Length: 188
Image 1 (cartoon, rainbow, N blue to C red):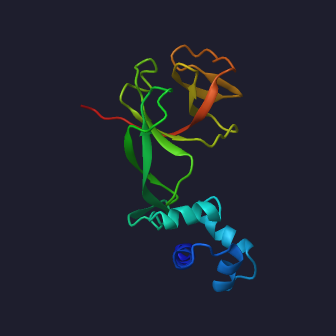
Image 2 (cartoon, helix red, strand yellow; image 1 turned 90 degrees about the vertical axis):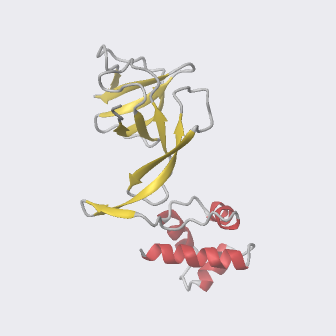
């Protein structure tokens, strides 16, 4: 991928001169203006020059993941995402999870291990769900929701979130955590 070369070159410039400006990076890369630097950072899923400098100077240089596979003509990368417990009060991940995703540096993606059988047969205890914090309200999908005390799973359908066991509508006061992209179940 060509953009990884730009990011690698920008990283090298930052290592040489940590106080380099966006304008100076654009000049070094012979870009017409500094907007191009932000364009390539965005293509790398990096939110701004300060985040990129922190990554570079912290020896965590974003580079394309070495393992990629093409699925349906789209490259997918093996990425590491945080794995959380089923307790909504727990703010720190308990482990890491590996997932094939269509971008080498995903933002707003995490995994959570289901801690109850309340949503069976669709979701069982110990299933691992891949959650995207991005919300799409134009199509039906499974969602992770929460209250102050618990996580809930529901199906978004026609402007309402349906509880899977009873098919009743959840109240509108729930907080949406994200959309469930994938489910991994282990049969012991």
